[in-house]
Image 1: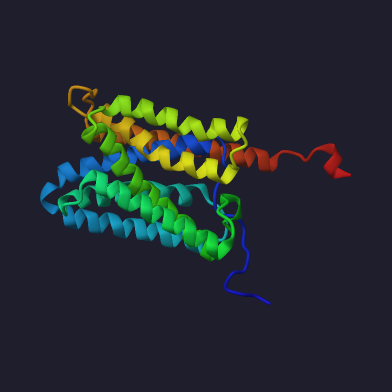
Image 2 (image 1 turned 90 degrees about the horizontal axis):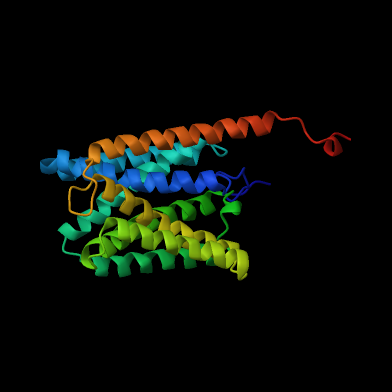
Amino acid sequence: MTTPRAVSAVKVPEITALFWIVKILTTGFGESFSDWLAHTFKSSSVVVLGATGAVTLGCAIVQLRISRYNAWAYWALVTMIAVFGTMFADSLRVLGFSLPVSTVLFATVLALVFVGWYMCERTLSVHDINTPRREAFYWTVVSATFILGTVAGDLTAGVLGWGYFPSARFFAVAIAIPALAHRYLGLGSVTAFWSAYVVTRPLGASLADGMGSTHHDGLGWGTGPVSALWIVMIAVVIAVGALRGRQLASAPAPAAELV
């Protein structure tokens, strides 16, 4: 018998060093490219937000319709969520939401989604993203983490006055804490993963902002060149990962498995 929760192939990548590298790169690109769009199309911000949302939706439809993990489809959606999530978070300030309020708001939203996911599925593991409902919860969490990370990064760099690169150093330390706690203190792998995942957003965004900003603590490269640099790095790392995956798939099985 088949049901609406029929199991399919896992549709998310393996959690390796390449995964974390691409994830941080997508966050930086999302921050820089959204800033470039906002500056370039300042008088058409609503139209640009709508167009970005439409492209994100298109990428989501492709990702949800395919039957198994595809690196280009998966990371295209993550990248577009990074761009749209940043623009959405920035639009909250136009509507009068302060950064502290937005941070608390989306931390609450994220917590509620996690609770709903666990109550429905009894797991939050990314290794179990193999049903439509679990994938829907997964992408909802991913979207919420991007928005939360955006406002949290802006909070430390702007409201708290730390600046971009000091904020990046802070989040680099913060992302190492769950990894070390998992390795040496027995922190659960699911908790460690999602704790680190949330922090990748402000880490990458702070780095990209520091590279593009013309303020006293920025390198002044501009959001356009920084966006181009980061998207090229994303494509290169994805291509390397895809090539490595094909090489592993075509490698002969160990002798013990051939018997």
